[in-house]
Amino acid sequence: MKKYVCDVCGYIYDPDEGDPDADIAAGTAFENLPEDWVCPVCGAPKDDFSVEE
Image (cartoon, rainbow, N blue to C red; front, side):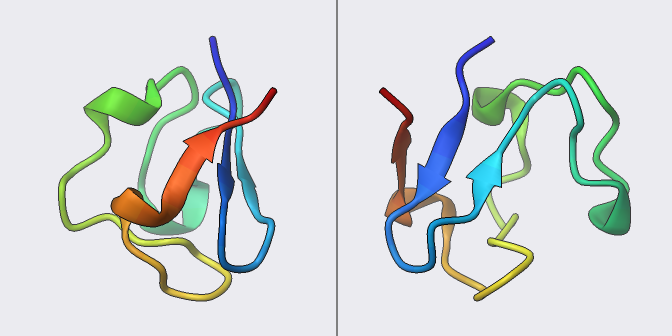
């Protein structure tokens, strides 16, 4: 699965890890994150993430 990087702070969302602090299970694709999910480091919205190349 593709990883996504926060354009604001550089946090990388890795679907293989999920976001346990936000109760996002490992294996959750970025596209399947809730619309109100935000970067766990800086609070940026999903719109501020881009595919990691």
